[in-house]
Image (cartoon, rainbow over the protein chains, first blue to last red):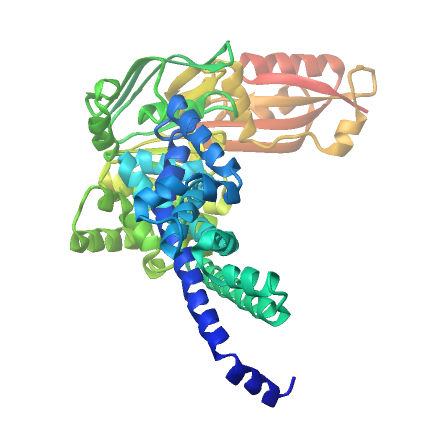
Length: 228
Length: 344
């Protein structure tokens, strides 16, 4: 492809380009909003899972088991089924079951237990001796969580954020199939169903670049905060 | 300052009960450096963790500075712990915080204002000799430096008691000595009571005023360090004392050593001197009176808490009857003699 032919294509397809730009915006909005909400619920859930463990700071077998079961249920429902199954709930929450806002609801719900497990794993990496040292110096449980556990697990937590956002990029394409919009939607409708290979390739390239950017930023931040 | 009364700790492994501590009684005076020595698995770690209730005793009393910790509410226990500093074998510094912020953490927890924290942390880092490292992260420090940071952190809330849980076990001998010197310095400067547990008799010998020996969850012996070294009553105590003196038989002797006594062999003996015998010029006396030639293979005399003691490995050359008489004479003079074997 010469420069001229690219320019030609650009001029002849300005409507498609508008569509791609607005779809990219929808994807980014879905991924980041769902991620934000997911972390709002997922981080406390992960912390609670960690604290209520048998050797944990607030060990509580019953609570731990119950939370574990809830999280496992959330993790085991295939996203495409969850998407459809919670339509009534989505409609109740945002007033509609189609559109970008409606897609954020199932995305956030799917992300929450996923994040909880990742956070639980990140906290597990914090050596037990640090919690013990904090207890010995007279730290209250809340102080141990905020000043020891979370800061010490920060590299792992940022890693969890990165993994979650990348996963959500993939999920958001599925959300597109029920009218959520976004790049995945464009790829399926224009590329897959209309056999338009060019559009298919363009959406895939944009998605790849998006994932690369998220991963690179995540890796950079982990490097910045990791002093281990 | 610390009173441990009738403390028991039972762990359950499934249904099996394991007595980690049985009827422990300890009394540690203000300003003392008290050592608890034991092999791994003897229960010493459990014992020190009972002093700030990181481990709750199954029963018994732990009184620190007049307060029975077991009767306190969680909130009051948290406050009481701020007056009990603790350092660990693996330092337990927060990797996400600089040296300065690690030392300042206990003050932050207590809600001290920033200016006061800065003044206190700067003076503590000066005290432990790390004034130039305050913006460094622990990962970039050596083991000895990490332990110095941990000591500074433990001192931040002006504790009355410092607990040292195998604080030098991960350090090389030279670094161990420098950390022990620092502990001695803060003990004298702040009249800080120090309870340390260790498996190294050298540590006890170097800084402790008193020592307790723990084996199998029981305290088998306790007293002033000098007394224990001079008159160990139990086999375990004797073993720990010997471990500080390196008197192994040289390999070539070991190979030639036999248990059979013949006309042409000489006995290889181990002499153990204690306070009562170490000063007398006994070796030359024996040589003169019994017409013996004595060849000393190795000898190690030490001085602990005002008491001298030592071990010697020697070969006796003489007639069998003279050798026997010499050994009897040595025993009369309060020297422990053990014939290790006979060398051709």
